[in-house]
Amino acid sequence: MEKLLEFARELAREAGRLIVKEQQKAGLVREFKQGKELVTQADLNADRLICERIGREFSEHLILSEESSPDLADVHLLPQPVWIVDPIDGTVNFAHGHSQSAVSIALAKDGHIELGVVYNPFTDEMFSALRGQGAFLNGKTISVSKETELSRALIATGFPYRKTGLKPLIQRLDAVLHNCADIRRLGSAALDICWVACGRLDGFYETLSLWDFAAAGLIAREAGAQYGHFSELPPGAHPEFHNEDIVIANQVLFEPLKNLLIEATR
Image (cartoon, rainbow, N blue to C red; front, side):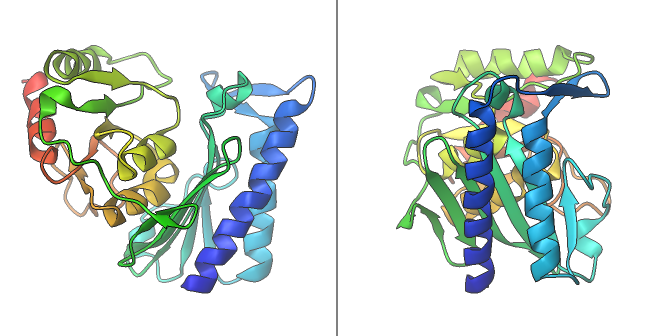
């Protein structure tokens, strides 16, 4: 697994270099998936680079990627190892010249996320973890914050591309604003979760896609975060892979934050 982690780190760095060069180009090509979700040529080029490298090195492995293979289902039940890839998490930030974007690469095997890498090429920050072996930022051990009071907690979340059914989201946002110190919407869920892992944020909640949180979720758990959901899991859902109503915080704040989010929509 150490060799696989090093492969993922180097691949994330290579994709990161591509992304930085793409952002510096004039006339960045932008498109919209289903008319709503922004995608750039850089997303597609980075995706191609990552998937081709994985395919060459591990031809027997499967790939779940936001851009080229987003429909692989029941990852936790598949017998083969599965790489879970988001070539640019935070595409809107990237397209607008912001620095809060990252390459996210995870490997799932035997019903668990075994390794995760989240790399921000604009700040040269590499978050990584192997299951059961701790979490790291640029090679140094990281851990979650020691905040114990929800009223002092800094909480992050994100908002969906589709603007239907926003009432419960607004209710939760209102509850967090009234009961926590402040809220952040930074535009990259993978980095938000990694920032919980290293103590820059005290908690996070959102509904995501698997490629958004697979790597970062492992990093947060390995940094001491409690990871779960503020709604009941559907029958047969795996808690590491279920994408709806994710909540992450340190061990003290997790239950108060979870309960706050539950009560907000009752």
